[in-house]
Length: 184
Image 1: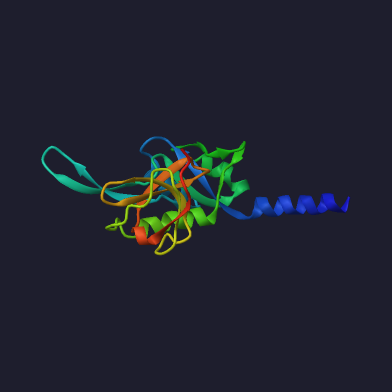
Image 2 (image 1 turned 180 degrees about the horizontal axis):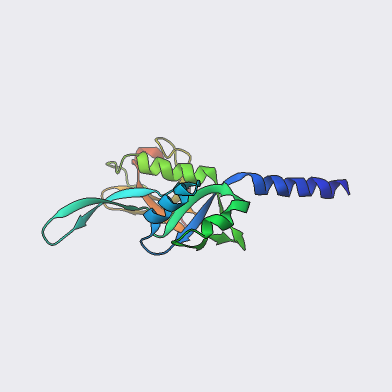
């Protein structure tokens, strides 16, 4: 009987603790959803990136969401229902039948990517597509991923498993070590 009490206390503690969750929004509603969630008292975050867009007469730098139709929210599980009721939110992102908890390390990784340098020059070319690699230095230190491509530079692909998204970042070859050889 005592173990049931401990298990129930653990479940209650988990429900009452703050976690990061991903909300799926209507297309192009990310900024509005974040504003509405913040106005409702939620800790909401929309990772943005600057891209160059070409118009017929000019090029312009614009801020766009890093993940289209995704907004992150730090909330208690019990408050997630109220967040989903926000105008523009389509649903909560689920993983294994439950709202997907995004680990703090993953949110921190996204933040590091966004504040880090855009790209580095790379000279060494000892990696092949599909190689498992680990970043050993810089803002992405200890991140792992798969080697994707190079065009005079090296790209490391880091996957956030709950979101089924892939982030391509460029880091110097000196900052990367191979974990395993690629499988053929």
